[in-house]
Image 1 (tube, rainbow, N blue to C red):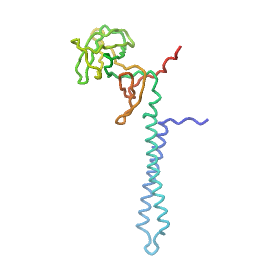
Image 2 (cartoon, rainbow, N blue to C red):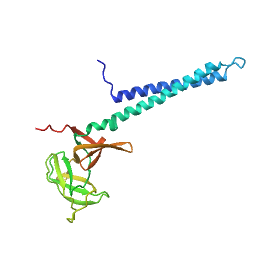
Image 3 (cartoon, one colour):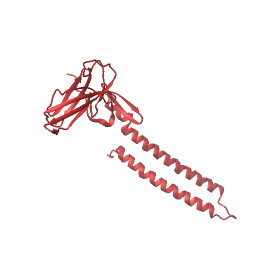
Image 4 (cartoon, rainbow, N blue to C red):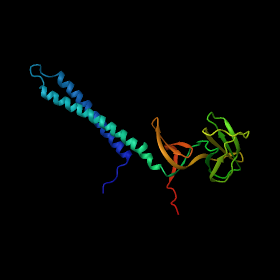
Length: 221
């Protein structure tokens, strides 16, 4: 049975082949130039032979370009749309803190590395300004959910559509406790922008490289 070749291995092989072709191409040019400079004026290189050499040189150059294209396709298959489509319909967790206010609320998860004596959550708007701040609903080690009702510190309901970020600050006495905000939910779409691939997860647009876990949705009873 032939072993499968990974995208990384294919990319390495393309790099090696391209390097060898490039070296041969440079050598070919040097030899052809030397041949033209040192040919006997009374017996010049046959035009048919010269044409064949030019065709050969063009073929080498075309092979270099083909290898570059193949390497590009390998990269796209690994991290582009074709590779990201498999996430649609899956439950994903991403180390990402930005989401959109929809239906008067925004949802996050947060994770604590260990239990803390004090955990404070802050909701920041697109300018980095804190619009709400308060104690977290849970302080024990592990994953927890938090839903913000879309109201600022004065109780004013903010409009839907704004993008907000969750900041988690956890302490045990004077020591900081490892903590992070997460986006969790079912991936519903994939898109690319400026060379980066993103997943739509609930009200969030999450960079694919921020996804830290993927699970198949539970089967219906």
